[in-house]
Image 1: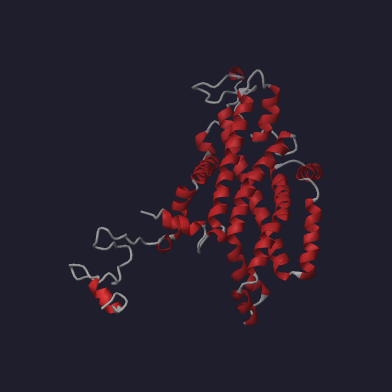
Image 2: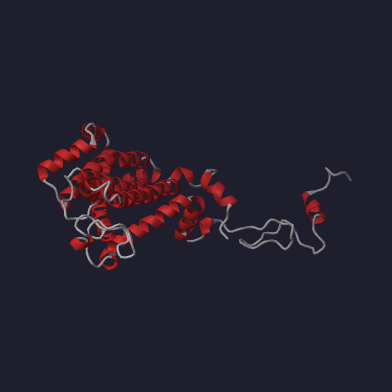
Length: 343
């Protein structure tokens, strides 16, 4: 009998080992075969908790994104517990301690009025967190409303809306901010309203692009054929499937809002003193005493740079991890999952 004449049953029987085990027998998921030479079968990450999977991927695949997330957490906690970290407040004047360099008593030195720079930076973080989250939330609401309506309805509604958005985006952001603040006046809530409106209209383009690709899916057409209303389709089918780009847009807008607010305060059009805005500290104290007390310009600048760097790194990592084009199939996501399984 030649090799070609051996039936598959005979070949499988001849391949049985000394222990009488059939190599074709199924192996339970997550358990290796008895033979030491066999490759163990690992449970894919998709069977684990999705939050654990996300943080595992964030740390292993995007370590800079995890570092940025740590900076964001520290910034948020500093803003929430600013009164506990610096209980003396940001406007406690001590004329005898004016322009003192960093020391054990004053970690980051003092300004020309004897105010502790560390306390002002900590309370400035609280102010930045309030302005950033409030203005970014307002901008995301505006972007979602404009993007959903424009992208889903299409036709003349989409064309008219997008031409208005194009006209808005033709003007530089700084010019719009200066004109709007000059008309409305400086203040915390004025800055939040202006920044939310500015970034909300320009960010609607991203939401609209996601809606245009989502509304062509089969489940949307099925909901239409079943008589579902437009509001129901937008709320139950479109919005949940465009959340990844919205989340990424939210994180990237946080850094942009902090920079814009600092720029306005640096020009004297943002939050007025004695509020400890980082941009105001750079403008008033930093420029006036740059050569006498350089820490007045260095410390707020370093705090602003670290905050923006951390938010941008975390936002970039979210974009890479939540992008649907990098998940499933033979893309980078499955390749990395197969190459570096979770222990």
